Image 1 (cartoon, one colour):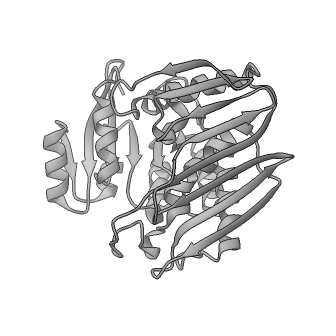
Image 2 (tube, rainbow, N blue to C red; image 1 turned 180 degrees about the vertical axis):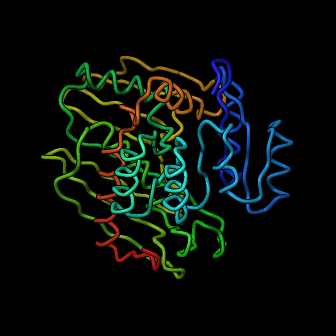
Length: 328
């Protein structure tokens, strides 16, 4: 890595990777250097769109490229663990799409490996780094709505029915919880800074064996976080935090928030509007680069313990709703 350029590599240039590549264009000193895909034509098309220097038709070749400073992993959930592990073994810093892994045991393994290899690792929960959510965090720390009592959120949409798509594919760790419910959960943990004490969940398992709707009540020592995630209908998809003095509303889509509304004693007090500079992924990219420049192995905004807590909670939810994956 030079003082002037930070070379990113992308593993798996699918839908979400486009948001990452577009965001790189507004991050100072960052560039898309290499992309790897099992489909060379896809890698070629992606590299042409984003002026990428190198393309590879296998992931390991990208990992072995000495000019790659960090790797963004964007393949289906099932494969996150394997390829994050391979990156860490090669001492390549990792930003891996959520969920970091499929189980808490896998996440713990990656954390221990990152420590052993002295190599940066972060789950790519872009929502935590958005300016609107950073303002929400400030309001909470200032006790603007008093003591938190209830969190309510939803992330549910009517997905196009395709049993081979990763959303419905059990072999790829599909389903609503891991794909979208993780946002409800990780942002609850972001607000409350701890694991829930108790978990109550119910879900609808569809014909392909994945959850097409999951509803959860989490108890954080008297504070309740209630959410529904799903693939079979569209809900309000906002996130509301209720305190004893007021509330904070993050309008739909809360996971891609550009607004937040603070109400005190039932009256609107402040509404902030903070649009993205690009796709919104730029803020987590900058965090990774800053952490690596400072020699840090993890981010204090998206620390390893939070990723582990999220996975432990999702393991418990999956057990309650009868969702298992054959490869773990």
